[in-house]
Image (cartoon, rainbow, N blue to C red):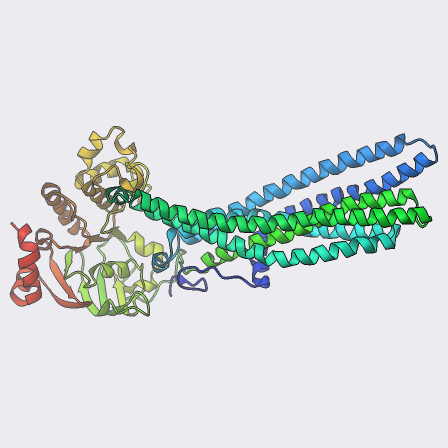
Length: 599
C-alpha cells in the first residue's frame, strides 16, 4: 500500500482561476462548519433590516399626524425604539459574523499548515517556501470577509433590497421606475468592473507571495549576503517585489473604490430624479407630500442593501483569488502519516534488533524530464555494523538515504527495510526506526534542549546527558550561559559548523534508532572531535545498523563493508583492503581523496 496521497496536481502551485462552481464549493467547505452561527447572524441582520424598513413608514405616519395637528409623542417613541433596537441587533449580528470569520481563518490556517508540513519532499523542492508561507498568512486572511460577511451581505442585502423595492412600488410605481432605471444603468457599469477587481487582487496576492520568497532567500543566506556586500542588491530585489504588490494593490483599490462610490452616485442621481419628478406629482395631486417624504427615506435606506450587495460581490472577487491560491496549495501531493496496512514482507514485526537494508535493481530519477540518478542499484546490508558509501560526486550516494527514508519513491525496483518494501511501511513506523543526520546538519531556532529532543520529545534528562557525552557536547553545554536552555539562534547561527553537526548526531542518537543514516556527518569536525565521534559511531554500530556517506579514509576504514558507487550504479562491495586490491576506482579515490587524511 502506498502512503502517498495525491492532492490532484504535481509541481509548483501556479495561480489559475477556478470556475464559479469550484470557487463556491471551496468557499462552502470553509463556511460549512460555521453555517449555524452564520445563519443566526443572518437572521439577526434581517431583523435589523426589518426595523430599518419600518422607519420610513413611521415617518410617513408622523408627517400625516402633523398635518392633522395630532399628537406625535407615540410615533416619536416608536421611531426612537426602532432606531435603538435596529442598531443593537445589527451590532450583535456584526459581532457574531466577525467572530465566526476569525474562526474560519483559524480553521483554514490550521488545515493548510498541517497539509503543507506533510508535503512530499519533491513538491517542496519545486515550490518557493515564501510563496507557500504567504498562502498561510495573507491569503487565508482574505477568507475572513468572503466566507461570512459577503455571504450574509448578499442574502440580507438581497432580501432587504426586494422588500424595499416592494414597499416603494406600493407607494408609487412611477417613482419606482425612475429609481430602478438609474440603478440598472449604474449596476451594469459596476458589473464591468468586478472582473478587474478579481484580476488585480490575484496579481497582488502573487506579488505578496513573491515578497515572502525573496525575503526568505535573503534571510536564509544572511551571512553570505553580508559577506558578498549584496545588501543593496537584495534590498532592491525585495523593493521591486514590494512595488509590484503596491501597483496591483492600488489597481484593485481603484476598482473597488469605483464600485463602492457607484452606490452613492446611484442614490444621489435617483434622489434628484425622484425629487424632481415626485415634486411634480405632488403638485399635480397624484401623490401626497407624506408619500414623497417616505419614498425619499426608502430611497436613502435602499443605499444600505445595495451597498451590501456591491460589497458582497467585491469581496467575492477578492476572496475568489485567495481561494484559488489556497486550493492550489491543497492540491500539492502529501504524505499520509496515518498507520498504513502492513505488506507481505519476509521479516517479522520490527522490534529492537538492528534493521536490515536491501536494494533490488532500484532505478530512480527526480522528475520524468530529468536523467536517471540510479541505474539498477542492488546491495544487501545485514545488521548490526557500519557500511560506508563512497564514490565520486553525483554517484547517487545521498539519494540512497532519501529512498530509504521515503523522501522519494523509487522509479523501479524495490527498497527493503527488514525485508519489507518501504512502500508497505506506515511512514511514522518507518521513520521511527531510522535516525538521520543530513549533510548540512540543520539546527532549528529555539533552545539547545528543544533541538536535542526534536525527534524524541519524551527523552529523560539521564538519557540526554548520556547522549551529550557520546556526541562530545557535554563540555559545550557546561560553557553555555543557560546550559540546555540556551537559544541557538536562527538555523543555529550561534553554534559553529562542527557544533551543529554534533547536535544533529546527538539528536539522531537520542531517538534510539535501529538504523542510523549519516550523510557526511563529520565533515566539519576538527581532528580531535572527529576521532571522538568516530568512536561514538563505532560504538553505536555494535548495536544498530549504521550507513554512512563518507569522503574521509579515517571514517571509511572503520566500516565493516564499503559500497562503491559510480554513475548511479554499485560498482563494488567489500572491505577497504579488498577494494584497494581489486577496484581501480576505489584505489584511485583512496590515493587522491583519502590518503591525506589517513594515519
